[in-house]
Length: 287
Length: 263
Image 1 (cartoon, each protein chain N blue to C red):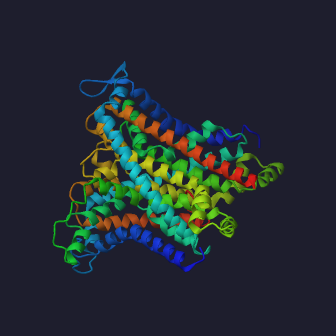
Image 2 (tube, rainbow over the protein chains, first blue to last red):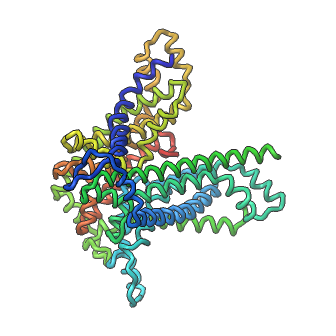
Image 3 (cartoon, each protein chain N blue to C red):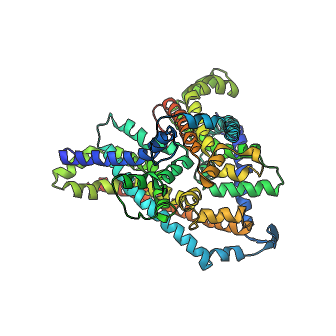
C-alpha cells in the first residue's frame, strides 16, 4: 500500500484526539495566562500572576510536600516491587507467568475500592485496631487513618503491581550465563547482584519509579480519602481551584506545572534507559 | 540462586508481597458477607448487604449509567482505535508528533485531562451529562485499544496484504477479509480492556458529568459513599465492582495470548 492510503484510517481517531484532548489542553495552557474575574470566571487579559502564584511560598510548599510524599511512595514501591519481581524471576520458568498474573491482577480492580479497603483496615474501629485489642493490647493506639503514612501506604498499595511488572521485564530477559560467569569469576552473590544484575535492570527501576511518582504527585483521590483533608497535595489543590475556589486560571497554571514535572521526569527516564542499554552494549564490546 | 537459603528468602518475599496485595481485598470480601457489616466482629454469614444493594435505587441508577458510558465509549473507542492502529502500522514513516498524540491519553494525569475537558465543554456552553463522559472516556479508551491492536500488528505478516492487493482486492475488502480476521482477538482484548477502564474511571467522569444527579456513575457514587458516611452496603458493592473488572480483564488477557495489557 502506498503512504497515502492509511491517512483516512487514522483521520477519525486523530480528529477525536485533536478535538477532545489537544485543543482542551491548549485551552488550559492559554487559561493559565488570563486573569480571574472578581466573582470567579475569566477575564481575557494577559497576566503572569497565576504563574507567579505557583511560586508563592504557600503553594510552593504544597508542591514540595506532594513531591516528598510521591518520592517516598515511589521509593518504597520500587524497593518492594523490585524484590518481588526478582523473586518471581528466580522461580521456575513455568511458574512465572501465573505469579506475575496474580501480582498484577489487583491493579485492574477499582482504584477507589482498593483505597477504601485501607480505610477498613486503618480505621479507629478498623481491623488492625480490633486485632490489637484481640491479642490483648490495652494502650492507646496512634491514629493511623487520615495521616501522611496512610496516604503513602495507599499509594504504594495501588501502584505496586505496576512496579513489579516494570521491574520483571528486564529481570526476566537477563541471560543466566552472565550471572554464572560472574560467579565463576569469583564474585559473591551480593557483588554479582550489585555489579551485574542491578545495572542491567535500571530501565525497569526508572520506569517504575517515574510511573509511581507521576501518578502520586497529581493524585487527588488518595489524599482525599486516606488523608481525610488533613493536608493538600497538588491534585487536591487543582481540584479546589476548579470545583470550589472557582479560580480556573490558577488551577490551569498548577496543571501546567504538573505536566512540566511529568515531562521532565519522562525525559530523564528515557535518558536513563538509553544510557543503561548503551552501557551494556559498550561493556559487551569491551569483552 | 541455587542454594536453599536464597530460595527460602525468595519465597518469603513472595509470600509477604502477595499477603500485602491480597489481605486488604480479602478483608473486604469477607466483610461483605458479615451479617453485622462491621469489621469488629464476625456475626455470621449473610447475603443481606447484597440484597440491600439491589434495593438501593441510587446505586442501581448509577450502575446503569456506568454501563451505558462503558458500552458506548468502548464501542466508539474500539472502532476509532483499531482503524488508528492499522493506519499507523501500515504507514512506513513514523512521526514523533503522531506517536506523542497517540500515547498522551495514556500518560497525561487524569486530573489534567479532567479539568481541560471541563474548561473546554463549559467554554463552549456544551451541556454536560452522560454524553460528555462518553466523549471523554473515548479519548483514553481509544489510545489503549490502539496500543493493544498495534502490539498484535507488530507480528503481522504484511505480505498477505500485498497478496490480497495483487489479487485485485480493494483496500476496504482487504481490511474486512484479510486484516480484521487476524486482528479480531486483539480487538476484542482491547475492547474489554477499554470496558474495564471505563467502568472504573472516576476523576474524568466526575469533572465532565455536569451537576445533575442523573449522570452519576458508579465510581462517583462509591466516592461519595466512602467520603460521606460508610454504610456496610459499600463492601458488597466493592466486591461486585472488583469482580466485574477482574473477570473482564481475565477474558481480555486470555484473548491477548496470555499477555497482560501493558506487558
